[in-house]
Length: 419
Image (cartoon, rainbow, N blue to C red; front, side, top):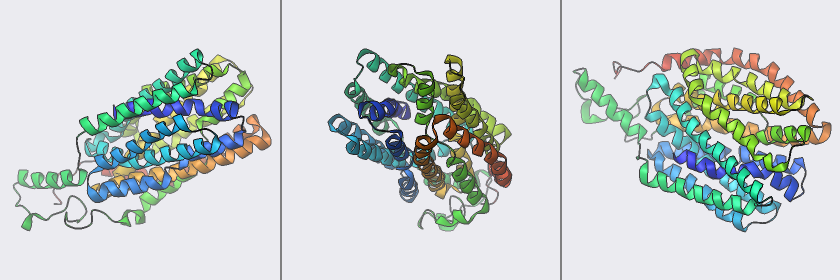
C-alpha cells in the first residue's frame, strides 16, 4: 500500500512531464531525453548504497523511510520551482530517493516470502505498485481535462499522496530484519531436527558469516551466474527507451489532444497491474531467467506498434498493453532472480546492483534515443531500436541459460541439513 500511494504521487508527475517540458516549456525531445535519462538513471548508484545500508544495519525499513521521505520533499520543490534547470534537479533528487528505497523494500519482500513463490510475491507487490501508477496519471488526466494548464494542481495532489505513503510506511509497516530472521530460523531448524545448538550460539544465517562480523562482502560479484545476469540485464537495458518516447510517438502519429496524454500511462499501468501476479507465477513455474529475457519480445512489438504508420485507437491500445506486459514479465522477475542467486546477508545489495545496472543502461538509452529521434525521426529511430533488440534477445537467452539452472536449484528451500 505504501508503494501504491507513492506511485500515485510519482506517476502523476511523470505523466505530465513530457508535455510540460516540450509544450509548456517549449523545449525539444533532446531536452526531454535528458530529463527522462535522469528519471531512469539518477537512482542508479544510490540503489547499491541503499542495499548496502539495509544489509549492513539489518534494518531495511528505516533505509526505505529515508528514500520515501526524500521523494516526498521534492513534491514541495515542484510547487516552487520554475524553469528547466530546477525541474531537472528535482527529478534527479526524486530518483535518488527512489534508488535509496527500492532495494531495502525488495529485500523485505524477499525475507517475507516462500522461496518457491518469490516471483509471485514480487508480482503481487508490483500489481499494487502499478495500481497506484495507473491512478496517478488518471488523476492528472482529470486535472488537465478540467484545467488545461493545471500542472500546479497535479503537483499538489502528488504531494498529498506522497505524505500519505510515507505515513503508512512509518506507522504500519513492520521492521523486518532479514539477516536476524534467517539466523533465528537456522537455530529453530536445528532444534526441530534434534541437533544441538551451535557452540556459543554464533552460527551464521547463511554462508559461514557470523552475526558479530560484517553482514556481507562484495564477493557475490565473483560468482559467474551473477555476473552473467548483470551483463545480460545491462545489454537489454541499453535497448529499452523510456515510455515517454513511445507515448510521444503515438501522439505524433495520431495527433490526439494533449489532455488525453496522461491516459497512455494509465493504459500501460493497467496492463502491468493485471499481468504482474500471473507473470510472477509463470516465472516461478517455467523459469525466471526465461521469462525475463523473452519478455523483451513484447517490447519489440510495442516499438513496432508505435513506429509503423498504422494509426488508430486499436494500435495505440495494443502498444500500451504490450508495454505493460513487458514490465510484468521483467521488473519483479529481475528482483526475484537476483535475490535467488545470492545468500541472505547480501540479498538487498545484489538486488540493488542488478537494478542499478538496468537503471544506468536505460539512462544511456533514453539520452541516446532522444538524439536518434532528433536525427532520423520517430519512425526510423523506433525501427532501429526494435531491430537491434530483436537480434539481442536470442543471444541474451543463450548467455543466461546457466543462470536459469542455478536459480531453479536455489529456489528449493534448505531443510537445514547443512547447518
